Image (cartoon, rainbow, N blue to C red; front, side, top):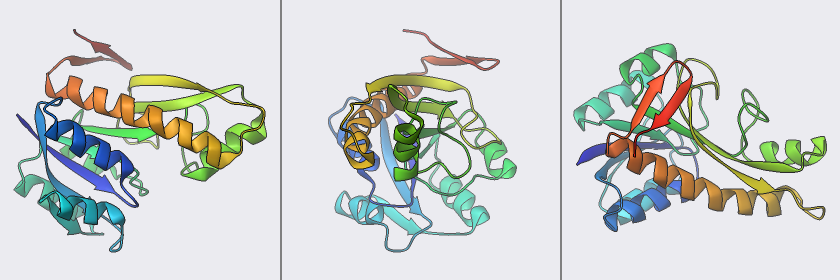
Length: 197
């Protein structure tokens, strides 16, 4: 069973989806620690409610130390709104994944987070959007893609209604990606990630 560390900046709905899936036995891993760069992030409260270590830490070296102290095998960025440094990436190369609420490489990178992503999709007139799980590299939303799923943009959508439907997909593919990682079923070849089922 692998040890999972989750980094959050907000409410932690993706975190809750991960916790629920591990408790149900659908992921061969356990969330050992949740770290937030925001002291009042509800994600920390979700961790406490599930008897998971909840740590407020803004210093990246401090975060790395906490993850190592907990013997973390997989780091999950679940709504963590801070760019990761190359040093951090190197510490957990190919062992850190992120969820993003669009179909990368569209509507991603610097400045694209939260509702701004969905508003960007609507303003552009895109007909489909979705969510992407990817390995984290030195860029913003540029790492090898593990899994994507699409969501149709409806004519009457606003950023909030679109976000709700995308969030359902986020939960689904993030849980699946973590499960595959924990079963050692992912392999990276260049920019491509293969699922070895």
